[in-house]
Image 1 (tube, rainbow, N blue to C red):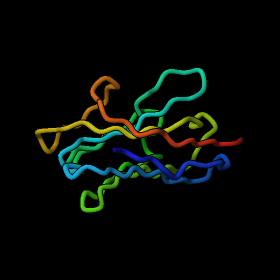
Image 2 (tube, one colour):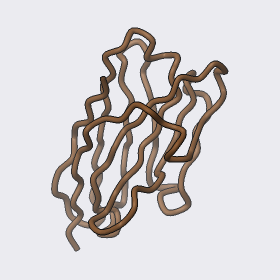
Image 3 (cartoon, rainbow, N blue to C red):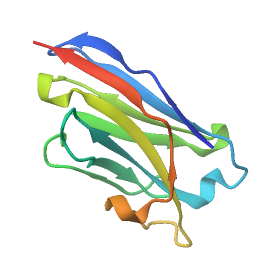
Image 4 (cartoon, rainbow, N blue to C red):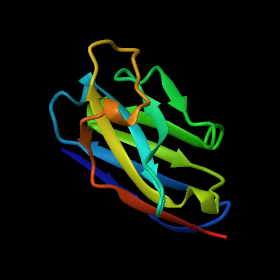
Length: 125
């Protein structure tokens, strides 16, 4: 029920926006997150946002460069990536978790049951 899009090939220092579209009616009841998986590495947390959009959290490696946001009325979540680096190269996955409380957010891989198919981001040096 999650569809990620927007990946591509960019140069170091460029910007890129990836998006995640949800098809469920209860999209606004889910906390959401972005994870990424580089070749040969484990999937890692990138950013999370609460169901109401008021709370966000970032991995140290992307803090200050990436911004997560959501528009519940449109069932979409996005990740705006600035100042991209070659080490940001990965497949980016969006994930959703039902959240009873508005401000809650989740950063652990195992917290999430619903995953999108991933969108590939390649940053050349």
